[in-house]
Length: 113
Length: 113
DNA sequence: CCAATATACAACCGATCGGTTGTACGTTGT
DNA sequence: ACAACGTACAACCGATCGGTTGTATATTGG
View 1 (spheres, protein in one colour):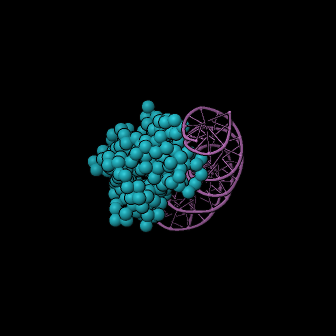
View 2 (cartoon, chains in turn red, yellow, orange, purple; view 1 turned 120 degrees about the vertical axis):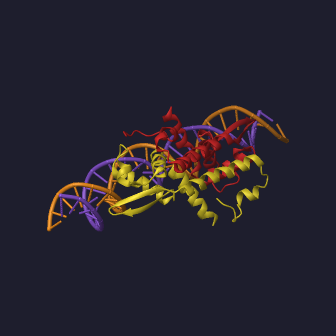
View 3 (tube, chains in turn yellow, purple, brown, orange; view 1 turned 60 degrees about the vertical axis):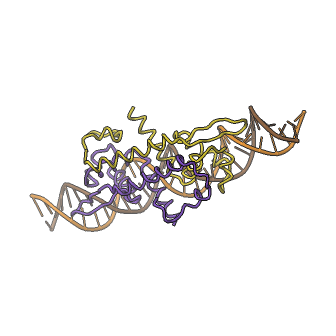
């Protein structure tokens, strides 16, 4: 379970670690856009943008719904908030120096301490 | 300097997109730790941990100070907050459904990100 | 002085990344 | 009916990633 949430965190931060994807996320948080409408905004191939959208979708940061031949993407604000809350948890560690509840904050990789 | 802030954002999200680095960051936010003290906590080589620390340092998420032959790492909570504020900005885009696409493309330089 | 400690960094390796082109397939409008 | 559109995916490529080992350089303690 902690392993899964770590996988999810990895995927979300990775998805956000690319400026094109952050820009796409901004657009789909503002409103629904088809993949081709998104692709038109960038100086790269349709396939490249489609892959960026897929990365964001896999991370749960956006969802897609079909409308005819189009695929409409919408940003998932709850997922964005969940990333923000991870950072808030880190900030709380700093604030309180609560080193003892470390399991709550970050699912530890295999270490023996 | 939109390009530089995007570079910084790339570096920060990338640094956070690895569970070992998130765990290291959590530890150094809780208090100063030498690189070797950190390395002792993980089932990987010292060099691997040292590189993770370097990635976090390059992203500005931690700072190092020398104490004799040791290098003490501390988490930079301001940097963590700056990442959180990027997500808050995204959430605001969702909340307001900002229709001004031009603002999304060219963020005004006097805003904090 | 000398051995142990702490760090840094280079070289290497397999895996993944971010991009490309090409192909396939369902949907739509005329 | 059928050409154009929208999407998905595979194969490929150079670059980067996350790890390793090995070496170099300070610094410390006995």
